[in-house]
Length: 261
Image (cartoon, rainbow, N blue to C red):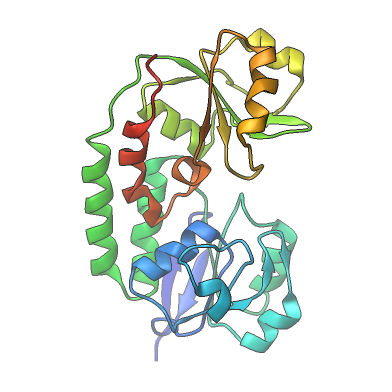
């Protein structure tokens, strides 16, 4: 059977002779996407961070983490497609896998690129109609997003040291779609901040993400002491940073946030 070429979002070509039947996903949001496109038995390996859909962590083979692949386990699975992401995976591991297996990589900084990824993966795995329907659903959902009056926001992703999402990130694009202004316009996508930096930024709103650092109620007071006038809220990081099928749920979640007060 003739090989067909599928370009990825890094400009590489992935060659497949037929829809893959032995897929490994290296990215949680793309694992969930594969499920929502109607795949199940075709997905044979996922990372330990692939918590959606519920149950797959118990039924699929774990191949390590997003930045620590278990090459011996992957070898035993003998995949005919591996799906990864430039930011979430590590280049040395991807290069090693690319020597042996077809690898398709995403590179996503905004909603348009996320929708392009969904379309491409739909074509890649033989689920183009399901992908088209999902894209229409996401586009329709985002038309309902309520704007938040240009409030200045700082989106924290890590503690000790403090780290935040700056421009050129997918999180940044989600903030813009809410009508918010990201305090951080930095060449670094996730810069480290001092406590003094946070105070000097003087944001109107500080968002404490549930991932990758699991911010909780106990951390709110610490942030309020740095910015007494800011509104500090805990937010579901999946809704701001997962760029797969979870996007269909994000607009309703955004609209449920109390940011205007």
